[in-house]
Image (cartoon, rainbow, N blue to C red; front, side, top):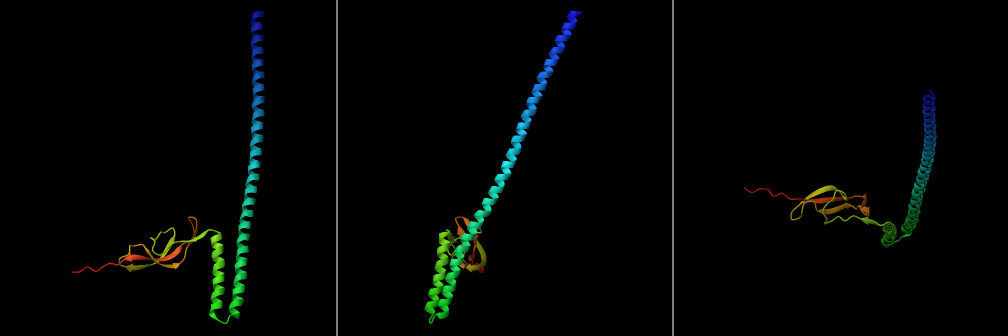
Amino acid sequence: MTEKRNNEELYREAKVSELEILKQSLEEYKASVKEYSDQLLYQKADFANYRRRVEKEKREFFEDGKNSLIMELIDVFETVKLAKDMIEKAKDSESIHKGLHHIEKKLEDILKQHKVIQIATVGEKSDPHFHDIVGVVEKENVEEGIILEEVKAGYKIGNKVLKPAMVRTAKQHKKKDEG
């Protein structure tokens, strides 16, 4: 009977030992889960801070760009006021012409500074990405879709269209059938 009792005690000790190992593993898993949970919360807070910082930087960048544009517009405004005074004091149309030319040059310089390019039109094949067709003219000896006239200029920066050009294009003149 002692042998049976020894076996039972050994079995119990083995089970207790197994239970202790399981408890220890469970505690390790709990600690691991807590560590991952804490890391996740930290990452979540870090990402929220990052998002707020990026939004703030984006707003500041936009404001800086807007302020820069306004400064350039103020410069043009002052030029227009100066030209207006010149026109009011002008005794001939040449002074008026010079004043308007000065304003045009100032605006042209600003556009060049920002790499704004006028979209090519007359003689080019119309492209819906760059041209708005506002009229069609029947014409012989001109390929259909070729731009004949620019109604309003269009502008782009690189390949990004800021304002499409308004154009009139050619349409093949249809000859009446003889017969």
